Structure formats: structure tokens, C-alpha cells
Length: 104
Length: 328
Image 1 (tube, each protein chain N blue to C red):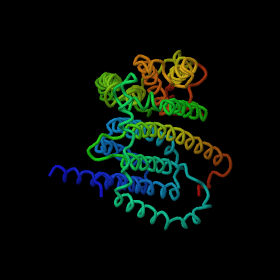
Image 2 (image 1 turned 90 degrees about the vertical axis):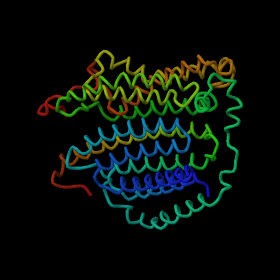
Image 3 (image 1 turned 120 degrees about the vertical axis):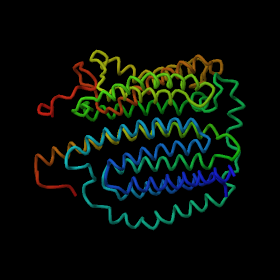
Image 4 (image 1 turned 45 degrees about the vertical axis):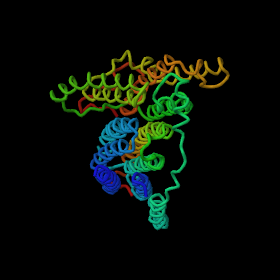
């Protein structure tokens, strides 16, 4: 067993916790957070498996994960804008038709 | 003794990351989830330090914890403002998804066992040696910067395009709304801004300069500059109307455009896309990095504010009107 594989193991757990939340949480913001956690899990697996003890970390996966972190932020910003828009449309729809009816 | 201590820290970090992720996804209080997510990002940064990836630690601390945190907190104000929170409507599919539950339990257990038990997964040499071997042919001494701007420059080019596209997507969804709370900004925040802003700009410049030979570089510097910009914007400073039109759009697209120009120039000059003349002169890489940093700072800040500036040249983001007369 390698001392740094705990991070890869944690990455696997993070991925599946995120996947579970992505399926079963109802709130859109929770789903967005879940996708973020899944991404972090993938990055941890990537770097955790690459890292050799006593050597510097391989620069190619590092650069790819750096790209990944920025793309995750792009995803989060776009998804949040969509969620806010969805909420606005829902509110307009509800106030136009049945104001007493709740979600679900 | 120090080795044992290191193992202990690794184990503690891995367990805390997992528990934090579980807690933040289990709670239905979105504010709590956001705060836990910021803490999660900071612990991720620590994990990157332990994994000897300082570039990632910097990026994660600024982007993963900082800017995503601000983004989530501003989103909460819009999402939580009414009684209703955005949800998936309808129950369809939820019950059938329960079938997946055993798979969601067994799969990670198997993978974790595999990962912890088999040493040969990581027996390949990796690309470190080949990168370092070719470092002297290009204008930078830091391997990660070299990979980002030369060896895998195509990735980086498309990444800036994705960043630009995200802002275009956000802008196309709705016009900008005021992001401030109706209360006036406290004097403490103004004082903090005056103290922090010069430090942020200096640190950003330092990270930018460092990128050519040590961890740091265009993305971290740009993200830190974006943090400074956001601090300014959250303290009721605004981009004047005459700059929120063409100037802002040029700033947002500038990094991508200059990168694309260099790529096209290389295509014309050497016949290969992104094959820099002279093996990548350092002034060429430096000018791409500078344009990228500024663009990234502007892109990240506008993505967090969310919403396009209005067509009439007004301040960006707009002032909050008094609550009675708020526009619909």
C-alpha cells in the first residue's frame, strides 16, 4: 500500500458521494455542488495515482487538472445562471396561473 | 516520526474531505452547504500541497474556494429570495433510480480496495522526464507553464474559449441585476478594501512573474486579480458606463483573440498550429500570458456578477433602486 493512495481512495469516495447526491437531491444548487464534488474527486484520483513518492508530480496531469478547475468554474457559473432563470420562469408561471400551488 | 506524522495528516485530510463532502451534500440548508463547500475547497488546496502540486493548490484556493464561494453566495441571494427554491419538478425517475443504490455502494468499495492494494497501477514512468528534457527549447523554466503554453497549448486555447463561452451563456440568459444588499457598505469593509486591494494586485503580479520559473502563472494571477475586482464590485464600486460596452467586451475576448492570433501566425509561419517560431520565444509566451491574465480576471469577475450589461451605457453592475421601485 502506498501512502499517497489514500487521496486516490478519497477521490473515488468523493466521486460516488457526488454521484449519489446528483441523483437523489432535489434542489438544483445541491446538484451543482454535487457535480463540483464529483469533479474534485476525479482530480484527486488523477493526481493521487500519478504521484510517485519522492519525485516531483508529473507536470502534464497537473496542467490538465488546472484546466479542469477552470472549466469546473465555467460549468458552475453557467449552471447557476440557468438555475436562477428557471426559478424566475417558474415564479412567473406560478403567479400567472395557480398562486396557491406549491412545487413537487 | 515525521513520516508517521505525514501519513497521519494524509489520512486525516482524506477522511475530512470525504466527511465534508457528505455533510455538504446531505444538508438541505443551502447556506450551510455553501459554507461547507468553501471549507471543502480549502482542504482540497491542502491536499494539493500534500500531493506536491503547488500550482493546483494556488488555483484551488483562489478559484475552487474563493471565486466559486462568492459565486454561490451571490446565487443564494437570488435563489433563496422567494419562498421557493429551484428544484427539479416531478417525481418521475426517482424510484427507478433506487435500483442503482447497490451499485453506488459496491462500486466505490471495489475501486478503493483496488486502488489501495495494487502497487502496479502507478508503475509507469510518466511524462516528467520528457517534459524536463525539452524545457530548454522553449522560453520558460517551469514544467507546468511549459505544458500549459507550449506542449499542450491547444488545450489551453480551447479552455479560454470555454471560459468565454460560459460568460456568453450567462449573458444570454438574463440582463444584469444589482448584486448588493440594500444596506450601505460598512466602513470596516471600505478600510479592508483599501488594505487588501494593493496586496492582491501585488501578489497577482508576483504570481505572474513567478510563472516563468516556479509555481504560479497566468491562471493563478488572473484568478487573484479577479478576486480583487470582485472585492471592488462588492464594495459598491462600478465600471463606468462608457467602459461597460465595447471596452469590456474587448477585454473579455482579448486573451482568446491574441492566443488565437499567435496560433494562426504560427500556422502561417511554420505550417503547424501553435508551433511557436524559434521554439517559443519567452517574450511571445509572456505576451500571451499577460493578455490571458487580464482576460481571465475580467471573465471570472463578470461570470460571478452574472447577466449582461444593459444596452444603454449604464454602470456595470447597476445601482440598486430603492426596493419599492425595483424593476421587474
